[in-house]
Length: 355
Image (cartoon, rainbow, N blue to C red; front, side, top):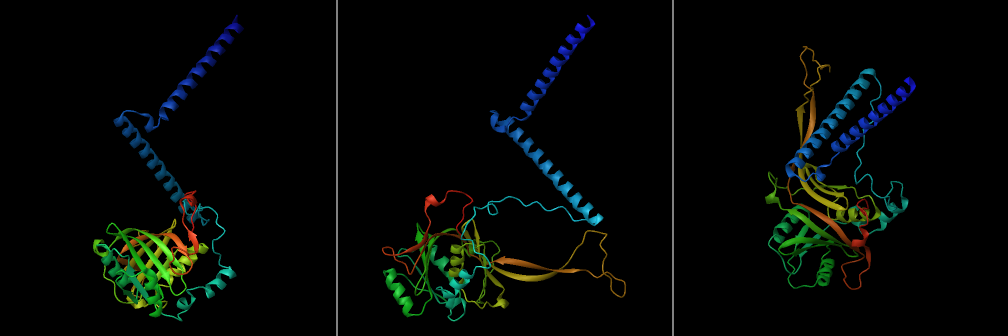
């Protein structure tokens, strides 16, 4: 009897354990309810805010633990733990065979023989002709006047009714090295056509997010000094060619006294343009750590440590370019041969870039 009773007790205990597990699972399921599953708007927003707060607290705990581990390692004289590298679209981009390498001899040989070599070797001074499409807009002249202040040795000519081929012939006779055509649509500049002379190439860019100088808060006024040029992230063969085309617009001997910088930053095939002035200032380095030994002079007084900081002032304008096509030679809609054309079917992945 006692044995049977024990068996029945074990069965009841097992049943009780199963019931407890089921209740825990139900609670877990309830706790895992997503905000999108809640129909009531007030409850949904409250649950979302709670989840967001929990994530923030967990992130803060991880940061504190990482800082404590680094501090402990420095005190013990060990190497600090390696920093975590976040996964971004840029560093997880699809592998591309055309990415330029520093030991690519073929690339350097091509640079010596391309259309921009005479300007980039300073054998020829860049001379730019800027014009518009036949139907100009209200913001077009303001944008062109700011382009003239950015690019040295640039000249504006009214388009009138002249055909583009006649303008190219005129520019060749007058020893211009590049033609820039500002295209407008619905009273807004929306495209740039950059033609290298006399043998091309011709690049067609889509223009967006234009902000003129007057619309930038606390903007500066540029001087007439030759600017420094910064080109970022033009890594592929196509990007290298576009970078050299942009580089050929500016003189290769910048005047550093003017402290002007023109930046073309490529990110995800969008080229962001910015124009700044900079200045270097020396400031006292305020060290909050009391353990750091402060330097003292002969009289025993503390010598404040100084650090050099750079300040920027944007001069404008700012805009974004996206390459639509690159054509051999000067602009020709009928018999032109294209080096590269952007097509919608090429955008197969968010991690595929061409520049």
